[in-house]
Length: 320
DNA sequence: CGTCCAATAT
DNA sequence: AATATTGGAC
Image (tube, rainbow, N blue to C red; front, side, top):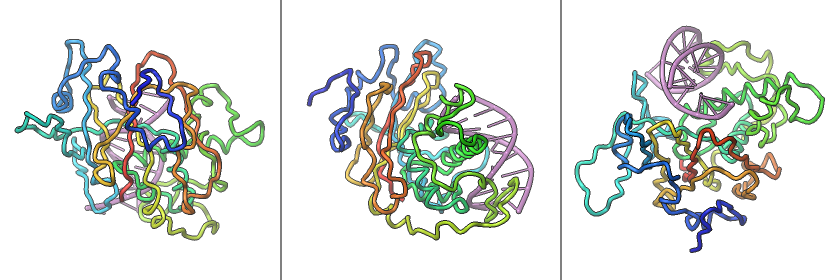
């Protein structure tokens, strides 16, 4: 295997078929300033690490929770974590008493353009009325993705849509009042906005609805119902999820994929070069998600070195 | 109860 | 700024 080392340039249509070859050695992944400590250690608690080292360790999350609607997370108080087997990597010796750090928090999910694309497709195909976190999550079929993750992203996405509504005409969709907005919206800009997304988000009415501002007076019949679920289960199982580790934080981990052909979660780390694009990484996109037939992704470069952000990306199975 | 949503915190 | 977490409403 050849490893360019610096590269990070992923190319080829089906780069994922050889993603593991691209995996840099662990040492390569770690920028010089970071020290490694045992996974458990780092994960178990917040390590003060006053000493200087930001301990970064990688752990595996098995996500059994995500899709299973029946699963319950503990709503109560502090720990909402879905703990799971830690990656007890040491095959030889260790055995024993490892403690699965309970009360562990998941690493921050990073919404990659691909993930977002999946998100948008799901919403689009669901129709606004059914596009609620739980449903979206299920349709996305991304392993390890939680309802909370989706909810949070959805909230932001709605804000984005509203912002867009305010802007009529004038330049292309990228028109932004302030530079800040432009920067902010890059992620969202990477995905086409399905026609009827404008105005009309918010009150869903069914099932929970909370204090929605105002529901739609009437409900336009757009898309019937697409049994997308079935299709999704079939095909698309490769969406990239990413985990970000704040240099500041001491918790870390990565989503694992328990099923499918890969038994080891793969991860690819490093900031993304501005232009190094991965091309066409999206799955074949079967009929199910075919709504948007645009060329997709565009990667955004990491900005400023201020926060040396390491991004781990890996590929969940997508089991539901 | 479970979920949604908006607000708030990190 | 981008996510996570919390709290109130159904």
